[in-house]
Image (cartoon, rainbow, N blue to C red; front, side, top):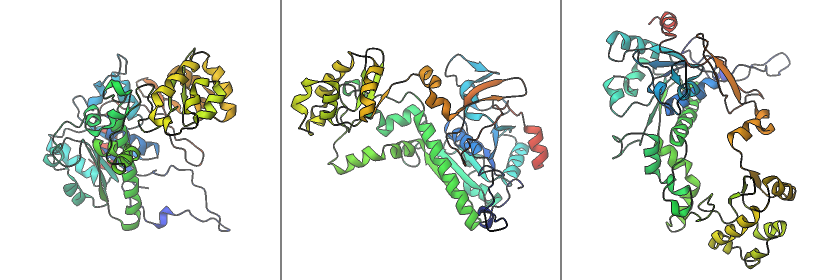
Length: 406
């Protein structure tokens, strides 16, 4: 398939072999599609990474003088080949095209590339993309079949000009009041959850728009924001809040794990680690653990929420007396929903993780090699993987310019 070529409805259907049986196609679903990624940092590049894992070719457009700002966004003091591990993780397998957005000749080349692309992704600050002349209305004149994706901090409204940064979006979303114990105040997630969720949401939107394009032949504009993704992330508990009189969530004061769930739901220290226990009737748990102090709560399910801190404190005292493995050997055969809390070392060494085969080593021509993750999705039983590491700035510029006649 040539770059930017149309995929009509008939070509989306399985081809028939002699005898009427469908021919199995082992190509990835997005093979042949070209994605032009003008985004930086995390949300847009994460979306592009997922499309790449599904088979798309991703051309990352970067400034010649420094490239994507996340090349210098260090999560630790580790860098590989002059770039942060974060940049490597989220940009593996992409091609880098150096474009000076202030140079008219370069901008003309970029427009020619967009005319042949299938998808464009951008997460510029509001107003910037319009000044560049690359807003959706302008670009669809060049390529009406293009699926154009935008990620902002807050969508529309009074916050639109505010910095669209993950921690700030978390702060405005209410999500911090679901984490931690009641006395802790707001607790943010320990990773860029808004960026990841927004990237995943817009990837879903792009896939839906590509399906519609296969039917109608027309592209579309897919939009989301960090705030919208975080609101959707909370749909379950927000729905409860909206339909129970507007009461705010009240986190447990002790071993909290979910603001709306009763005891024993939480994480408890054992003699040698931690044990997570999910939804379990108190009488069953009391019998299995031999906790007589839970007797007042056995036949009063309402107390499992109302008195959850007291109940959890009793359970915690008992669990601290033995090792995690001791309790697992007792609880798992009884079909109690529980799990040992693993750190990364334990996770990576576990059979459950190894069976998933979610790690890979990607390499670059300058001998850079990095161990990183693979796609979380399998197609026909096979997990996509790739051998290419994240690119150097403009590493593929010459080849891309030749191919697309830029």
